[in-house]
Length: 237
Image 1: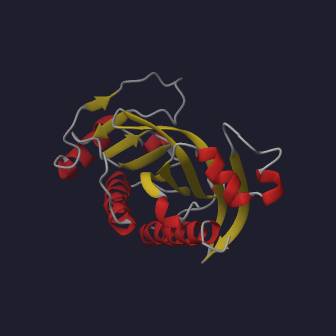
Image 2 (image 1 turned 60 degrees about the horizontal axis):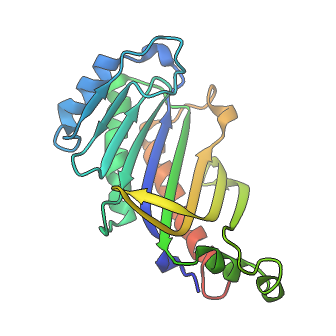
């Protein structure tokens, strides 16, 4: 039986969307982040002088740690802070969040950017020899497990809801599927659970999140993701 405790965070992405692309400067962004966080992003540095016709969401700056745990993708339109599990290491969700939030707050304040949209994406994984069977047994009626879904090679469920979370209008996407995940060049089969909680795309040009709202959103979204994890994968379900 697939349980919540079996699904561990493999990748966490905290994303801020910055609609005023004219305020972006690659040299300024690079200096701002490395000026304070060079100890964290101590791996290779990519600063790409891309032509203006290249889409604004394509990263102009990519920073990462030597061990591959931390990564930051910076583009004129959005910034994504990654935490990526290394080997069998584990980390508390609170620690993952606080590290990324700190970097994003520093970036927004230093660049004097407006933030119009936020997203938290958590990818949880569970190694399994027969991941399709685990998902089928968890979510399908017994008579279907032994008939049309018997011996499935791959399986996926997908649910989308619109929620109001403590003042934030949020799209909540949950995808539970079979797949192959590669972490630090290690490949394995298993169950992959993707939880994507993002504020509305149509609010990008109108909504402006203050620094305290950015931190609050990621905390609220993380709490919702944890609640959903337990609800979907409780022993009773």
